[in-house]
Length: 162
Image (cartoon, rainbow, N blue to C red; front, side):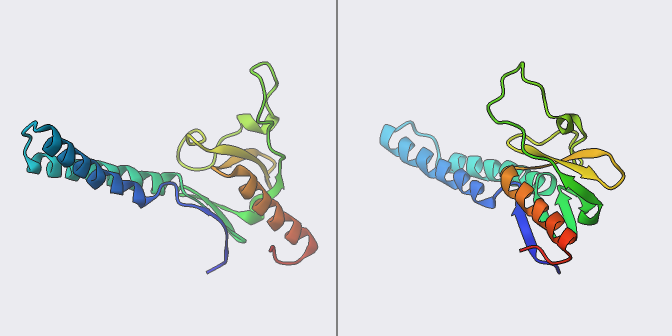
């Protein structure tokens, strides 16, 4: 197994801790306000929220996770061999106005099985060996761009990326 150079899980399981916290807050507020709601209603609410939340976290981890090794870039369930990548484009300006032109790579297809860049992520323009453009994506696009560029630089020099 190759060393992981960059990774994002897509979502974290710790968000599921909110369901029992919600139930405890509800129980305490019920006890203080005396509204008379039964304890099992709060437990049921926590179980339902936990089930829905775990389904959402599982989906996010499956479809919006990112992993980069020297050999492969994984975006969701889509795998791209890094040997197919020939260029990583500079980042698009973050403080653009609506009238500013987009970078030419920003209209390219995004990697992964989702048709667009997932919410909360930014695109990383890459050119493939076949000549076509595509977009990788990550929450920390600068770190992914840097890791991808290190792979390309190491390939040019004939060494391993750090």
